[in-house]
Image (tube, rainbow, N blue to C red; front, side, top):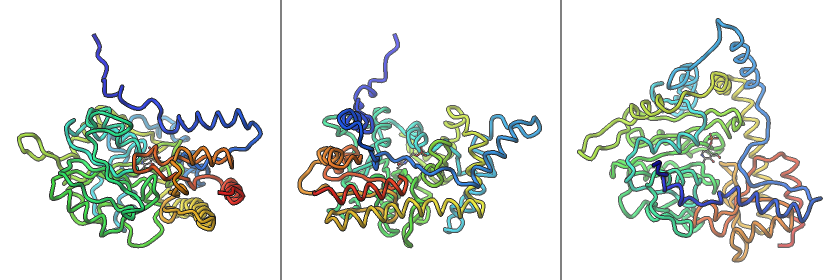
Length: 409
Ligand code: PLP
């Protein structure tokens, strides 16, 4: 008899965005003529930049000729891309990595979800709260999260990250084995300074814990003094795995490419006390369960590191960050309290009065036709906030701000 993995049965039926879609559909039925503007879901809207498109065309042409055709690629990804990553994303920041420490992926979500395969099911886990839901749900699937009651998992340590602590979570009170950090943060749009991140690295080294650092929004950092990689912190190579994505950096949400850094020094312990390097285990896991992201996607990603590619993606990021600036300024001028939007494409808006985040979501939808994401969907400390994204077109962003200004809050 086949038995089901019952951990899946505890996962909430209503994935956040499915619930939002349901509520938006109900609104559409009642208001068929209203144009809805989505500042909710975190997908990009601008097309791929010309350097990437050129690389995709060239790589596609290569696939048409026997002498340049590419089948299965190298297990860690093509050397041309891993070398470009080291040269452009790490060397300029004083981080030395070997290309065998880089694993090309089909995006950060898969690797963030799969990394638990190489870690025991009974490790204790901490997440900052609110948080990108994939971290908690993937641990729940593995049986690491315990029992879920009212959306809160018994074995996950939630570290409140709110305006009250300036979005800088306190270190866990008890010893934790695995810590998820995401900076710049989705959903709050906030960052940590180097000194703040240093505390986490120190903690992890002391506890022999592992930090899973999600740097998916690193390219959006505008200010100096904010680490783009956890490896800018001394000692981090001994205790952190870092996840990168080209999805938001270069509009690759539909192309699919990212990478994960597993330094040779990072290790975890067996029950008998032996330290095991995770680089080898991750390679073993990937070579069994993953057959690489396409040659065409990897050539497309390589093009981001050419001089033209760099300039073009910088312009695209500037476009989204200008949306973020317009949103921040409009909302602040309306007397609302907003966070984020300076080093990240997300605005974290405090709901006025005592409105719950789902209530405010519906009020905004019915008053303006604008969709946001209720903060409570990202964890208990997201209650009292909503997330707005800057990934829309400029026209939509401007129209949304006009509608909001007219809304007598
Ligand atoms: N990490 C964070 C924090 C995200 O917000 C997202 C996507 O929204 C991802 C990872 C996933 O990125 P990818 O498209 O590379 O799978």
